[in-house]
Length: 403
Figure 1 (tube, helix red, strand yellow):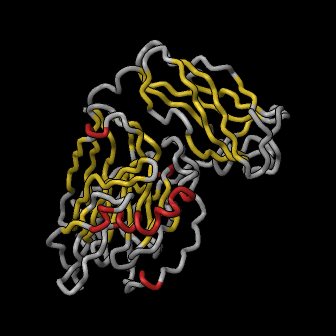
Figure 2 (cartoon, helix red, strand yellow):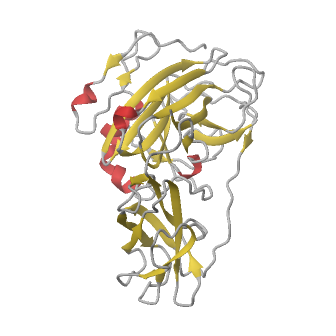
């Protein structure tokens, strides 16, 4: 049965809540249906209570590209969130999933760290030339060995930024304990972007890091002086997608962790880095972010990306649309694309874009100048506008550029 189109917008009552969003509610297809809250209102009302616990591992630098995580088991929706399941299409659009590289750990299994957060100096913080600053990372010991005074944080590549080559850990760190490690640094006198990478060294002199295989560094990344040259790309959401934290949900149920690059016919939804995807325009894509909402009425899927400090002249740009069905034609896809930001515990929707598969992509150019100087986590979401049938939603070239 063909999907009926939404014809209006209404303001959600969740605006009065402390975590309320600026998103509008999109009515369902047909006057007989009660308007459904927007996806981010659902996140606020249901998931915000646990968002701090869920996000401790995903606020790291956006360029990290560890392998796909194991899919978590899906929780049973609450009695108030039961909705009619919709049959998943038997065929999916043809495309290539872009695999993420993995490497073997550099040290023994007893030594493994997990990045928790940047305590100070988030990525792309703007510094004045020659400014002194303290970079602090929070790490968790997820290995079997205790980190003692013979362990150290060591510089491995990039710009050292006037820091010592190594810093001894401040405390004993047992398994499942966390530690804040601080390093005194100085910004270069010349302008530009600078990044330095660090790892841990154990008592035997072995180097180890973070990530599933223990091979990823932590880093400091600053911008000295003015931001990037006009017209430059500053944050690429496609290349950063594997490092984002992905969730899916429907109704008022809490967000459930979702493995990136999982199967496209997963009933829980999917977020996939795809290449060679036939678009609704008839063209074949390069690398794009394909998002499939949870296969329930008004199901949604969303990703929370690493912290980024907005600069003067920044714009969010993308082209939004759908993948074609296997026969090359438009299906019945109708979704609401959502762009939101998270600062601390506050989530705000910047823009909602209703879209239907109509043979063209919708260009988006969102001026971020009112957010200048703020360090934010950007959220990209896709919500099924009613039925999830044929909702093969595509973010083509989503990026922050400088005008």
